[in-house]
Length: 129
Image (cartoon, rainbow, N blue to C red; front, side, top):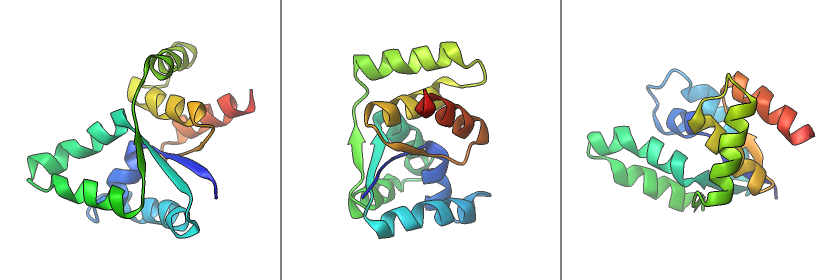
């Protein structure tokens, strides 16, 4: 069983069949769910994925899904926030929300699952160092 930190785009794509990245997100995440991998979601990612469902009155769908796959929502503590800032400072192409996703993965010693190619490349470089 592997530890996998989920980025916002994977969760949004997976949960929204109308999303342009839905099929790709399902293809990436479903095998992780089936394998019983430990799924980790940063509190910042959780907040981000809730916005649209809350606007539509369907916020419970997000929580029901996370509960069903036993995803762990982890807090953003000072250490993780500092690491996210350091990542953002080192990689100018990295947006702060993406830096939080990557910092969460690094702190948890987890693989980052993302559909964002820039973030994926940065994660590979950071994991290798």
